[in-house]
Length: 117
Length: 111
Image (cartoon, rainbow over all chains, first blue to last red; front, side):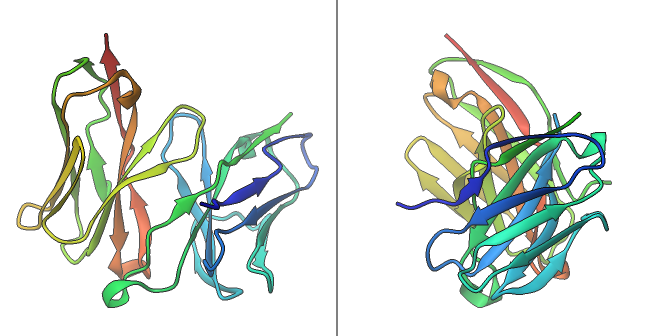
C-alpha cells in the first residue's frame, strides 16, 4: 500500500539559510500534519491542513510557514534557520473526520532529517 | 503536569516474556487512543487504535480504562524485534482532535 512520501530524506543547511520540505500524503487522504522531533523527544505538532486550508496550529515558529496544494501535497518552508532547528521533521496524513467526529488515524512518512550547521 | 504520561523505562525484558506498560491521560473527554512504536531515527508506526474498551492484534493487546484514565499495552511472547520505543497517543477533543503524545516507553528485549 502507498505510504506518505517525504523529500528530501536528509538535508544539511547553514545557519540563516532557508529550507523547503515536501510531503505527499497517502492517496485520498486530505489532511496533512507536520511534526518536529528533536533527539530523545516525542514529536511536537507544528501545523496541519485540511482540504488545503490550515486547520490547526501548534508550536510552529514564525520563521516557518506551510501550505497544502491542490493535489494535497504539502510544503514546509523554513527560513533564517537556527542550530536548534536541527531535528527530524515528520509529515503525517489522515482521511477526513472519522467516527463520531473523531479524526482518523495519522500515518507517518519516513521523515526528513535536517541538520543546521 | 503532562497531559499524557508514560514511564520512560527502559524496560529490559527477556525474549519470550510478557511485558505490559501503562499510559495515563488527563482529559476525561478524550475519545481516541493509539499506540505507536518508533524505532531509533525512524518514523512512528501505528501499532494499535483503541476506541472502545480495548483491542487485540496477535501478541499485542491494548486496554482502555476510562474510569481511571489509562491505556495499557500488553505484549506476549516478546521477540527481539519488539525492541523499540512505544508511544501512547491521545486524540484531544478540546484542541480540535490534535494528537497529544506521551514521551514514550523504551523497551529492550534481551536474548
